[in-house]
Length: 170
Image 1 (cartoon, rainbow, N blue to C red):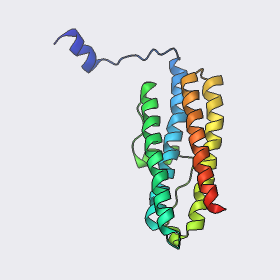
Image 2: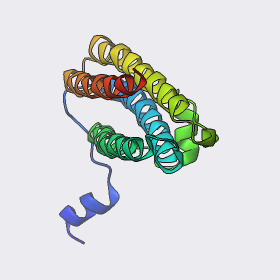
Image 3: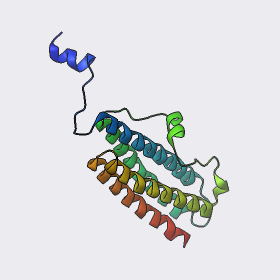
């Protein structure tokens, strides 16, 4: 076996991106919580997409799909950010439920569109608050400007998504 093959298959490659391992671990933990929250919101949006009823069904059905499509991209980007820091991203519902700060919806709410929108609005605002807090922490405590920038961009996207939900509520 060549040395190159041995290194690729049997030895761990150290991550040296200018952030100490303990700091990368702290950042990865914050990102894992965010990944879990995004999954909870994603599943909630799928639930609402399938189960919304009423006079605005078609509009809300499409709106919920638009939002969960955006979250798919967020989820992938967050998981890849965790990997870029040298850690494995959680990938099971059990892990997401343990890490999530948001609560999942355990019912279809009998198709109640207004309650669905209120729940989504509250969840977007909660994620915005988590992001606002975490972007400070990753820079001030962990010296990770890249993740801070990443979190600020996600925060701005959630602010826009919250605004869109709020517009439906009137």
